[in-house]
Length: 250
Image (tube, rainbow, N blue to C red; front, side):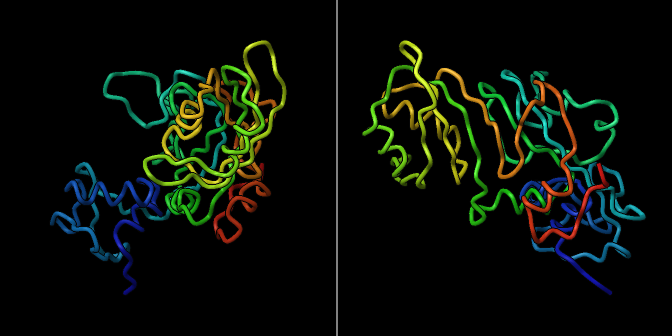
């Protein structure tokens, strides 16, 4: 008999990312053999009856893994469901992808921003990319109000205190200037909430527009807003070199 932690099984089956699976367990939404599950429970997927939202989850085999790149437009929420009925990133997916269970965004991109966003039903993949120790670089094109001088850009590169903790060193490059605004390219190796906007405000050059153009080796390229495409084998391998899961050939 082989047992695994329940949250790992839920992530492997595409129910949720491992972190969100832990939240589901803590909130009492998951049952094992008729009993409310507890965080830390181990299960044998071949023998135990695992239920979520009143439905048995034990599939005959793990679902096909899906790895997508979406060009998220401004105004769309980076979540799976919104109680207020606002448009979410899952609403933008074609029907062929909406039928796939467990799809969720990897990380976040605030509603006021646009650009590259990964989606998957592979909880282990999400966990890997979201873990702080991996420092997956993310590249942004950012219009700011005003013309920040070089000494301000250097402060940004070296790190700025946010909530009492210094940001990691970043790459900050001026691409061009137009009147009272400047276009910057910024590469971050961490993902604090609204980090670029908060740093820009603190330095006195607020963000006018923000677009993420790359996540590690995965580039937005000419993908149109609201469009989606699968990741290639090369992109997936470069994002997570140790992964044993590969998408179908594209």
